[in-house]
Amino acid sequence: MISSERQEHAISSRLVSPSAVGADPSKANDYNGFAEAYAAANDSNLVNAYYERPAMLTLAGDVTGRRILDAGCGSGSLSAALRDRGALVSGFDASAGMVQLARQRLGDGADLRVTELGSPLPYPDDTFDDAVASLVLHYLEDWGPALAELRRVLKPGGRLIASVDHPFAINLIHREAGREAECNYFDTTKWTVEWTIGDHTALVSRWHRPLHEMIKAFTEAGFRITVISEPEPDPAAREMFPEAIAAEPRFLCFLFFVLQAD
Image (cartoon, rainbow, N blue to C red; front, top):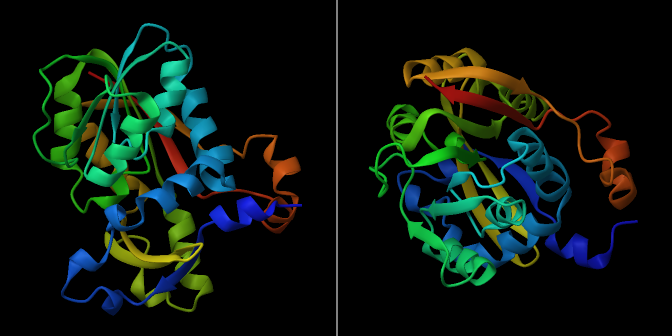
């Protein structure tokens, strides 16, 4: 059974019309407004704690002594896990509230900055062995500037390990809701959900793009794809979340890439 604490920290998601955001995009993605609620959910829920984050760590492998940039670090869960495995981690996020929570987790001495992915990054060329971009690229309509900057700060041969919404899953969500006209698989399309976490509700907008457009963006930025992964949840999830696993026996929530800087 799922504990009452996990139920409190679960994220329920409801697809909403593009007009819900309307002409005021500031209504969406205000992570400062629900930073603590989201961080608590991210630390313990099925999708983040028992599916996406374990997959990212598996793809990263042995990181002992490697300098890693956590792009879109959020409240620092992945940064902390990488640091515990021996990495030297720097991180940034567009949300000052999230960076504050990451600093509480990682300590005042942690190299954490408030910076938007897609803007010039405050790091010298060839600084990092790896960069991780955990569920952040899909917030951008144009991946070009963000990937160019990540490529710049990586050492030659460095890795970018990225997770994004699976384009098949996003297309399926719209079809099952009878709103397939709002999300043609082959188009790059903004879509919005309403998240509910305990007493908090928030609009979250992301960009769907087909797989071939993702690959094109990576290769045009100077990356070579070495791994494309569609993992299943951590085996512990079956004991922790039996009802959710039974309802969704096969997972295709996210798509994972390991890319090498040429």
